[in-house]
Length: 141
Image (cartoon, rainbow, N blue to C red; front, side):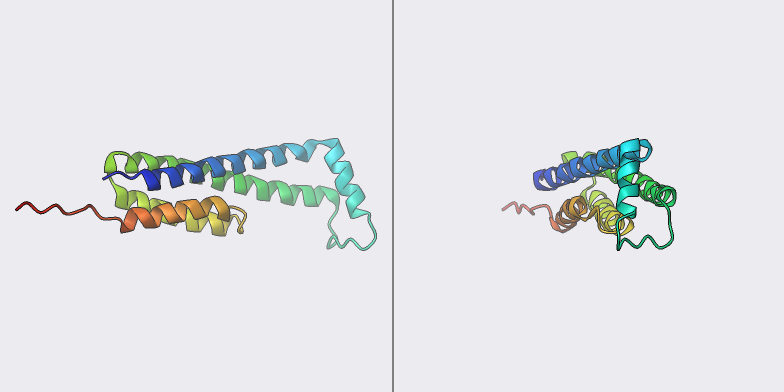
């Protein structure tokens, strides 16, 4: 049985997770950018801005930790998506691939606090299709 739908959906999810990781890497590189720091400090000095008692260094450190976690999760999700594509090709182990896709999609969406929900949606749909589709039974008369 061809698994074209599952493979295409998974590849779209892989590309979106990889792009998310790249964007996260770019954001992480902005941590040491003096223009970014100056813009953040100016934003914090605006009247009515509540920082909760945190200064620019603390906010940058917190953002850095969050972005690092996001990058790690999206890279893991990308690798698991590639693994699922390899399991789906040739209809080797579609049930295993479906389970990997479902678990990865749910965990990635939750751990990234909803930021990774769009690529996770592709994994989720591909996982359901991989688990639900059955091989056609051919009867010989």
